[in-house]
Amino acid sequence: MVLLRDGAYGVETLMLRKNSKIAFGGMWVFPGGRIDDADTVLDDDGEPDDLATGAAAAVREAAEEASVVVDPATLVWFAHWVPPPVMPKRFATFFFAAPLDRAAGDVAIDDGEITENEWMRPVDAMKRRDVGDIELAPPTWATLNRLAGFASVNEALDELGADEPPFYETHMARTEVGPVAMWTGDAGYEASDPSRE
Image (cartoon, rainbow, N blue to C red; front, side, top):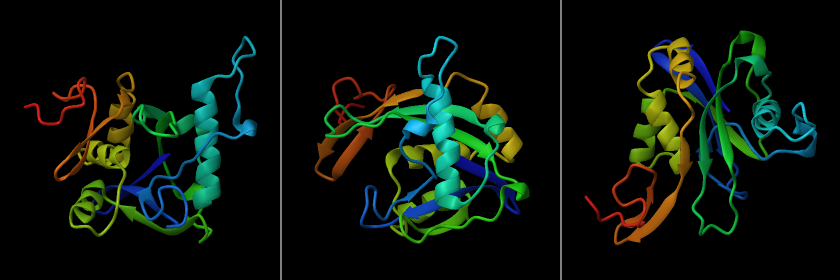
């Protein structure tokens, strides 16, 4: 759940720092998590609706991790991520964006699963990551990079909702300088070869 607000110097997004003792520990993330049974939304045929279920989970996770109330009607689905096939655990992840206004309540964390929270401009978060001040997973960095070009929350939501959400299936490769993540469109994606021009 990418929660957005208009700040004095541009769009800001709520970032949460995960406890270092759990999955993605120490990383700065957007509110989110796995789907619980109670999140399941059925379609007209009585079958689980994956997108609606993901949206219900996102709203619940925002409440659990940041103590904010998000109106489900404001959600914009803008991306779908899947980790590399070689990962021992794989999570299909829907990314939603939503505005967070004053009526949502003040952000509050449990100081258990989440240890810090901060509203950040996307460009500032990426700069902090580049100098080693914070750690971001590739989907988080890519999302921040996409958000950095928007001047307002309304513009961001309009643009994010204008196209079919991209599907990102990550391919990973090791190099002498560290791991490289690649997605559809990258030259080395199909062969998982980051050395290709």
